[in-house]
Amino acid sequence: MENVMNNTSKVFESHIRIQMIASLSVEDLTYKQMKEILGCTDGNMTTHTKKLIQEGFMEVRKEFVNNRPQTTYHLTDEGRTQFEEYVALLNKLVEEGKNAQKV
Image 1 (cartoon, rainbow, N blue to C red):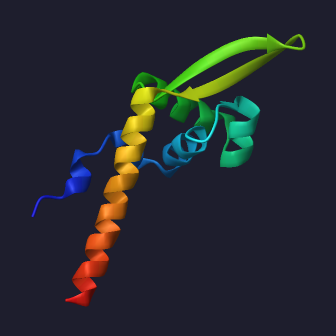
Image 2: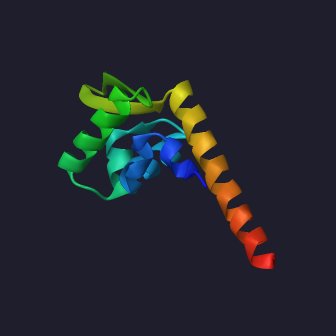
């Protein structure tokens, strides 16, 4: 039997990136908000945001708010679609597991 998880994006191999995408699926977040949600270092934030931007999952907007720089992250349509497909796949696997236990 083919492992269906092999067909998912490598983006989903990191729990930090999954949490970033899940958070952004609700609303756009600033760097500060994202960092508070994730509880990770600046280095981890940089590494994972670069990967999500590179893969087309996320966009970044830099602007000044009250004369202070502010970075805001946005989940792209492609990122949202891939995340919804990933969640649907996980739900399907859970249901298949439940059904297999009933047999």
